[in-house]
Length: 479
Image (tube, rainbow, N blue to C red; front, top):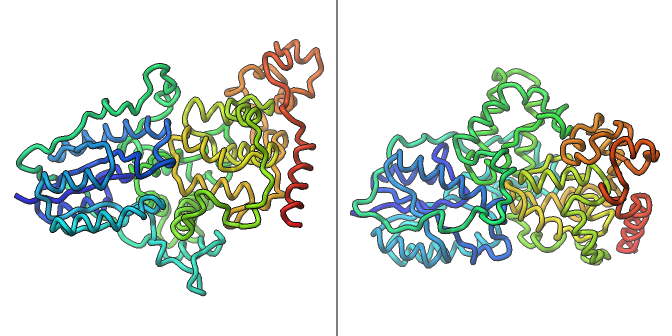
């Protein structure tokens, strides 16, 4: 008996899944297949934190698919070769998958379509990762959007391109078992040393956990999202980003659920809801940028920045990665990242500005670190946001907008709660000093148990000097 192979990638859910729904609708056995393909992804393969999340996500998805009747098949290696094997082993008459927009994924798709057709299989990619096809959402001149505000207005007016699709009640399994691999054998989770304890405490991967998190957020927090989202010490954000990154919940479902929190026709949309769906739109904007400009993974969207005099500063980069810059809000963010695999969005902007503008370290170095340490690492969002902070991307913050880490800390962590949590060696300092411990008198330092340069590092450079150096570099490329 023939079958349908459903190739799962970053769409690890069963609800609102067009490719899965279409596979079930064919009325034949469905073979859910996940391939861990580090070769095709190359330098953009899953980082350490993402691999930790992937293990949990595949575990939960495997349990759910067994409940539905057809177990998840796991295989590791080059996608093209494994698909050829599985299509042959199962006698499949169709191969379905959800479309991806990373450059390496788009490059391999024609070969996969040709392979399937050479074996007599229907081959079709379905939407699901985005709200709109990037090829269809364009400005009045027919060009892709490069500025967010008009993109947001167009997307807000158009809304998602499709409605929901039903979750299957049952999957028919093939008559004979399809050989697969054991998830534990992939070594996606650390053993010695085990650096994932903080992630285990903080996160529960999987579709069910993502939907529960969305429901909790929309139950109350969304209505204050616009005023609380910039303050890292309070639970003001949705923390849905890893669930969205792995497709455990789709952006359409999150968008529609948010819009359903207030009565249809109620105007204006509550500001918190509007702010939240705008963030979903920013994620979409990043993906559309990458679709239309795949070279942005390595090159700035603004060509003038090809000449920018970045500095090779291994010591500065290492201090930044370790959360040992001597600037408390910066160090707090990078320690939160290392411990939990996540960092608050406002703090992401602060630490990124410090790396590319205070230290003048190339944005690609920061992007690579985030890609390895974030559980929500997403190539489009990561690259686009780093270029945004660096001033070299689409709709970018101007390079001369250089965050002062002390003022940012005092504004968005006014009581010092966030810093005290992640930089506990400063916990006993008075609030007025916690974001600038070098301003403390010796008596204050002694009372707080701080020995400058020993219990907490002195600033690795002076921000005022760094700001002037960055502006001089900007003048250099403008000249």
